[in-house]
Amino acid sequence: MKQVLESIENQFEMFQVLDENGEIVNKEHEPDLSDDDLKELMRRMVYTRVLDQRSIALNRQGRLGFYAPTAGQEASQLGSHYALEQEDFLLPAYRDVPQLIWQGLPLYQAFLFSRGHFHGNQFPEDVHGLSPQIIIGAQYTQTAGVALGLKKRGKQSVAVTYTGDGGTSQGDFYEGVNFAGAYNAPAIFFVQNNQFAISVPVEKQTNAKTLAQKAVAAGVEGYQVDGMDVLAVYAVTKKARERAVNGEGPTLIETVTYRYGPHTMAGDDPTRYRSDDLDNEWEKRDPLIRFRKYLEAKNLWSEEDENRVIEEAKEEIKAAIKKADDYPKQKVTDLIDIMHEELPSNLQEQMEEYREKESK
Image: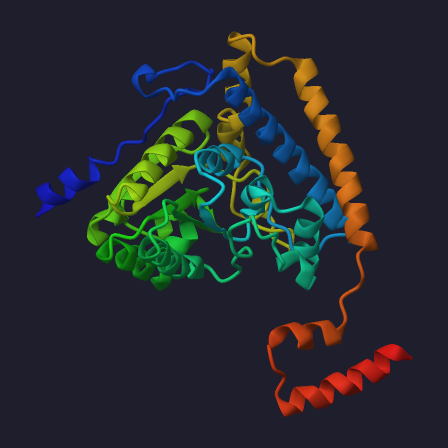
């Protein structure tokens, strides 16, 4: 029995294309991306890092509500998203707002979502996805259902979801992956293993050597990938998507990554459970530094390019927060009105009562 277990675990060696020095270590699996694609990937990563910095500042100023920092996870989030198509359906966790933004969600609406405004959840018709899920792991069961729906309708698209390592400790994780596997549904399940479920280290959540091997029990494909390597994440996601649309079933992908900031801005203090040495070790693997070195060696990126993106991001964020500030304030009648197609009698009475109050 022990030999069988070891043979399964040894199947999940971490996949990498680009090392910490920005050098290709797996030429065979280097993605066939054009120079423009490579530069666009870097642009998105730099932009998202600036967005994270500005969002933290806005939260501290009281101008944003709930916010989960993303710095450190750009390669995992954006490398995976870049391998998808516009018609694919996103079911993100609360840290995965960047993927929705690059899918087409207007930035001001992302800010409204953070504030709890209902308009932040009213996606444009061409943005295929659900609002970021707050309940840990719930998006996994939703993804299984969406993927099965895509299959039944004959769509050449996939349902894609994200959770953290803590999500794999939830029952919904197992139910979602198992259901999708049983029905051969076109789904991609991401586990962004950033080492801590809030303050609980991953080794205290499971005795498994990898989270990717949890795919075995559900009979689905599983991979562990260097989540600080944008090219590796892109390559694995591209393969998973091809498998899904070709009817080969779902894939579970563990991206081994790290979040530099707190779990959320709601009072978490990472210095209480993470050491400076650990932070410094992971910062050496920074996805932006790694990819920047790679592009600079190919003469595809410069300090001027980076500064241009930084200024672009700052200006667009400034405009978006102003638009969010100027958007009509949420009213109680708005919430009552959008909850039901036809209001029950008790809510009709409340609606009339609140409309009278709001008119004064």
